[in-house]
Image 1 (spheres, rainbow, N blue to C red):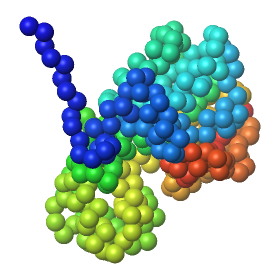
Image 2 (image 1 turned 180 degrees about the vertical axis):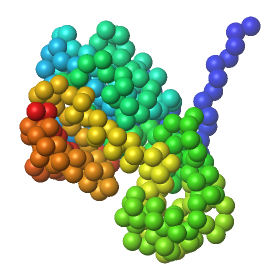
Image 3 (image 1 turned 30 degrees about the horizontal axis):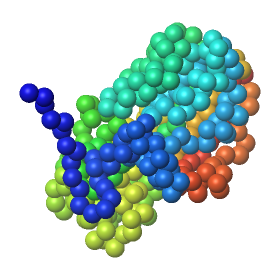
Length: 329
């Protein structure tokens, strides 16, 4: 007896709203016209990610055929695809990512485009350890420090407060503790300081006090507590950002990466870093300026580069992006 095909989950209303229900967006090859409509509205299809400032990155990194490039934060692979195309023939790209959920999908996607093992290799690891896996210095190194849309949009990952999900926020859900566990053990003073340090939150004390009044295990519980203090959704975003940075130890990883970056670049090699909030940008700016003073870098970006008005309109999630670059002496 032939097994009947499994029916897709039903949803209420004319259009699917939940991440798991958007089956057309999860299958762009089959539903290209529907996905094109989502993109035309300035939205990101479920399960996908739109690479930020690709043209500007290619200009400052100037990848050439035959070069070795590293994408330190592979994500959906949009930047990697552009770099791989630019360094052919003869070039090679190494892609790093800590996310065990998304990395295999991206590797398969790029393999399907024709980039075989001789051209493209992946490592599941944090970019802080880049120096450990490089057999030789690279010509081009890129790090995009933003959270991928695949992570933001999937409630199961705990990055979004639009839908109910576990209060997790880990880039690698197989390591470390979720945000709910952090909140269960931190004291009020330390939490307030964490919100200031990681997100420049002006109402850190009041929000920290409210958060620790009861055990929180889901994203909507946390968002609700923050809103009840009179805070806006901007404050909710800042709190989620601050907790994500703490859970993933992002600043320590960035500091380690910036220390080792000159050792990972060939003479004349180019590095570019995309940041999305002031705490990251300050670290990158100071590291590049120190490297220029010490003549480790021959040149650095004197002004931060930002997305064009057109890109911000087409992809609102890129609005806070800042790009800085450096060239090895």
